[in-house]
Image: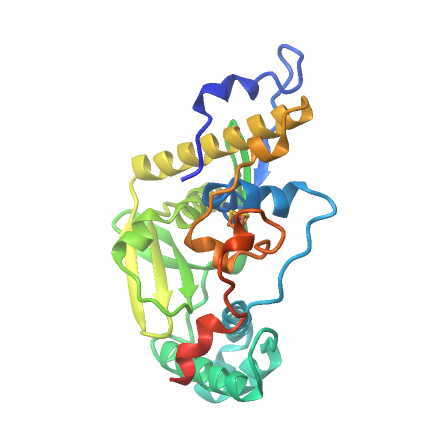
Length: 294
Ligand code: SF4
C-alpha cells in the first residue's frame, strides 16, 4: 500500500494563504482517487505530468468493456418497442471498439461472447423500465471534495419509505464477484452519496452486475458506511494536495509520488516509463481476453 500522509493534513487549509478565504476543493472522480490509492506514481503520470508520459497500447479488455457498456446505454436510449434481443447485434456492432485484440479471429470470438452476455442480461430486464439515469453524471461537494462521476445506471425501486435510488455497475472481467466487492467499492459508495444528494432520495443499495456469469452482488450501505467512504476519499484528496503542495515548494516529485510496485504493474499504461514497472513482465494487450477463446 502507498504511504499515507495523515500528518500533513494541515497543508489543506493553508492553500490560499488568506485567513477566511474558502479552501480550494479537490475536483475528482472516483477513478482519480483510486489511481492514487493504487499507485501515487501512476496518479502523477496520469493527472499531473504534462505532457503526460506516453502510454502503452490500448487493452482489448478495455475495448470489450467499453463496447458492452455503450451497447447497454443505447439499449436504454432506444424506444421501448426496440428494446428486444433482436436489436442487440446492431447495437453492439455500432459501438464495437476494435483496439487491442491479437487478431481478427480473437476479436470475432470476443464479439460473439459479448453478444451472448448481452442477450442473457437483457432477458433479465424489463424493457418498460426507465432508470433514473443511464451513464448519468452525478456530482456532490463536501468541505474537501468536488466530486463527480458517471454511474453506469441508476435504478428506482420502492423502499419502505418511498422511492429509492440504486447504483448499478456493469462488470465484464474474467473473475466472478463477491458481496465484498460491492461492499468495499469506494466508487459505488461515492456514486450513492452523490446520487442521494442530487436526487434528494435515499440511495443506499449498490449492485455489481457481472455479465459473463449473470451474477449480481449487492450491498446495502448505511449513512455511517457512506460517510466512512466519503471520509476516506477526503483523506486521499488531502494526501494528494499535500504532495502537490510539497512539489510546488521544491520537493522531489519522485519522493512525493512514490512507486507502488506490485501485481498492477503488468497492467499499467506507464509500465515502460516507470523505473519500477520496467522490470515487471509485460502483459500482452489481449492477455485478459485470451480465456474467451479457450
Ligand atoms: S508500473 Fe507499477 S509502480 Fe510504476 S506507475 Fe505503474 S503501477 Fe505504479
